[in-house]
Image (tube, rainbow, N blue to C red; front, side, top):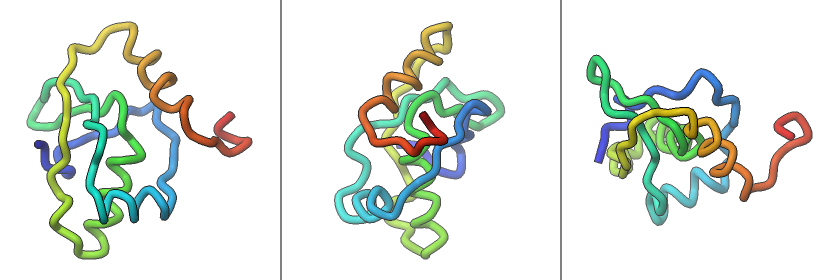
Length: 99
């Protein structure tokens, strides 16, 4: 479990969080752990799970501290990380801009 404020998004992330994901995280929590790199300078770089991270941050802004710590899986970064991001996002509906 990692503090959401210790997670840094990838510079390649451009996705936004929607209200339905935020409410899902509020009621049932994070069902799929975020994929992150081992920490550098106390921060973890998110490889996959950017929208889940944003949902938790939005809940923090609403004062809902019970979701502050999120489950994470640690992975060494390699060339396949970009592919992991693409594959992780292919299962959800995308806006025309995201496509």
